[in-house]
Length: 479
Ligand code: ADP
Ligand code: MG
Image (cartoon, rainbow, N blue to C red; front, top):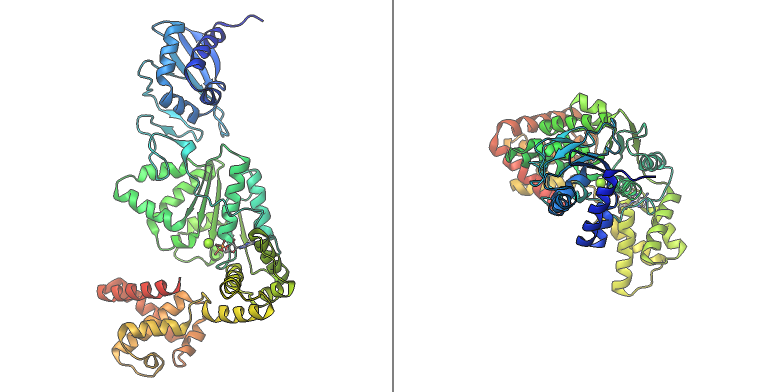
């Protein structure tokens, strides 16, 4: 078959370029290009993606320019046709780049159909200026994979939904996937595992993992710098967005608003959203109703406490990874006695190993018993009511007994109320139990205390500062 003019011209160009760039770059950036058309000295080439076009323009504009002039003539022009990948709409219009500047003043569409002005590339916290798209750091932790996420009844639904999503991100009914459950049960691990598997199976997909706290801070920073649009653009540009611990969006109204906008955009464009939360969506407080209803759109899957067999498997898996062997009795003893969550279970194992190696003791059942005893006593991460009472009383320089007494002295009442408030906030104790711990008071007293503290935080600056300081002390000493 006779070769067409554009093919011949491009063939000639490619020979010149081959001699002028290194082989790896040539293979990556020039081999995939397809010549489409040559008319009026305009050569149209097809490139596989928006990013590809940007890369060429950024790195090879000079050589393209020179080569085209040489092959086609001084008035040569280059026109790009971008294949729109994974797009909801397949349309792609060629656009012309006038050499020699190589800059197009015309905005082009990325695969979301969102116009990007090429003169002002998206700035975002993850991209090194000048390098776009491919350089978005996923912020994924490669250590958290499906391989080391042991399956059990406690996580079956969430784990399998995660696997299905990784095959077809955005293409399943599980959008968003909301993974919820208590502390230390594997939410963060699973969220990373899904992201990692997506990256592995769909190299082109842009995945970002972000904690809700980081998202909030980025948003605040962007607002401060007047960059809100860039912030939004960045997140709307992703194929997969994973947000860890969305309960932290509670009370953050402006962040909720902007997240709502991003969520809608991604969802409408068939992009995958994965969220984790420390409670079921229905139990989230201070969250915009519209956002809450969206959280429930896809699949909410909970992680619960693993049963005994799963706990044993998790320990065995961990030992296998670390190349450790322990007697079966020891493993079962640990699994039997640490039934709170996986983080504690891992903690006990590490603590046992540390004891063994530091004291050169044999890792036997006796040592395990000792460790578990110490472990449960010393490092339960749940904050205790005693502890909160002590810190608050230390802060106000009053004896702990005072908050449990009948005294109605103003400063004691206040300390008592603050301690109740933190107990409600930071422990799982019921209102009734809190009342009991504070000298046998009624649950309505506890509600009243929490309301009073909330009101004073709003209205009294000094009070608010005190509460913040106490909170800091509690948290520094606990987490
Ligand atoms: P969460 O985010 O729910 O608080 P994490 O994801 O941080 O919990 O998990 C706590 C620890 O327990 C991590 O080290 C994680 O690797 C481990 N873990 C949790 N679930 C499993 C599981 N099913 N298999 C193996 N390790 C697990
Ligand atoms: Mg977590």
